[in-house]
Length: 591
Image (tube, rainbow, N blue to C red):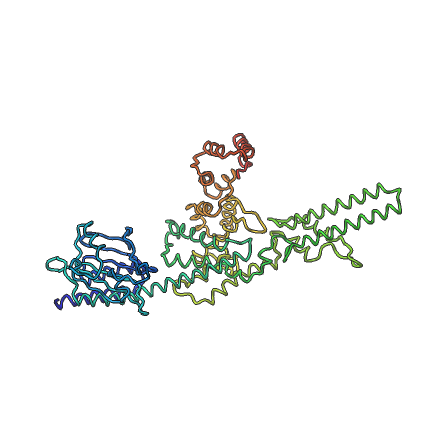
């Protein structure tokens, strides 16, 4: 071999060694290793194997003369069976050249597989030759041994080519040694890549474990930490594919996507500090139990006392029996009405009127007797809870809930994130901020927030609006949620451009189809959606719901008729009749 060729081989080895240190996927590494080895040894073909359990699995196959590319970046599937490392009796399989290299941790250099008295079983390559009109001659099988001397794969080269004649020749000692040097470096790089992949997988598992623990902490928020990352990525992809406004400059690579996904999984990790009784507070009077039962008991005592007084008065004034019974019945009616109103107020809702609050205050002026004590029918704490304007949380409890985002930021700030995850804290900690600076915890404005943080803010809101597992409200219909989101855009709550991408790319439909298996439709949605800038997407929603292409009103009616069953005939029949005859379609619901 000439000195010039040796120099060229050495230069190629150095070039590949440098390339191996760059950031690339495992698939790219395998391609680089096989192509590099073929180039150094001037081989016509090669195969790269990986160890999987007790088998050696083919990952990439190349043959220049056959123009064959299987596995790897080619996308072509590999049908070659794996090679067992052990026989059925447990003994090592030494018959195959690659399994021999694995067990003996040594390179095997075969000059001609068709030579007589060959130790190895080459029935496989010979069968391949017949099927593909090929002639396998020389083989070089090199184990990929890592720093712990574990064999993680085998590199096999086939048919060294004479540069002058083009014929297949044996692999010379220089090519043999250079290939071993490359295999050694490749094994270390693959091991490092495997360790990185394992660490990332473990990191993601711990993150998802935390998110699952938070979701499972309360039956009312189960799934929130799992749904928000998915919705965040859907919206981010919509923004990435937008070609107008400032979003046309927003482009994500794989690392950007991974960083945002991790932030999505961690966005509510601070809720682990939130007391369960607040997270689970389904009614206004609930703490560790619903105190409505205590109030009901007091009212029962009042009704009992009223009855006792009536009976005592009848004994004293029997001639007034009828009048006394009427007074008693009126007292009972008043008590039952007051209790019914308290029960209604206890459920919480979108808004409590001032008049309803006044009625609670009036009811609270009543008293009941417990032994020798005269007590107010409602305590100050119960009054404060029953007069909550929206939802079921008091101002103090709302502050405790809101503290979770501060806890999230504090917890994540203590983690030493690698460079490619440096923005996780900012993304996860900004989903309760508003574009107008009225959000919390830091009162950031649109200009102070990244596009990713603004994206997660919309995802968190839309998930909450459509979620059906909240204790204090029913899930909003899809059209209602979009209408609220539109209003938030106009009020400076959410980013208008990201909202537009959310609508234009139909993210809401993709999300609904994936997570809202029973999402509701109303014919009033048509007006709501037009207002939200959606236009004819109601028909697309109906298509999803009915599994049928809906092109217009006639198709809608026919599709609805097809949905009628014996169980639902009355309901749907009545709806269709109303839909057909009504001039005011906004009054008709199709659930």
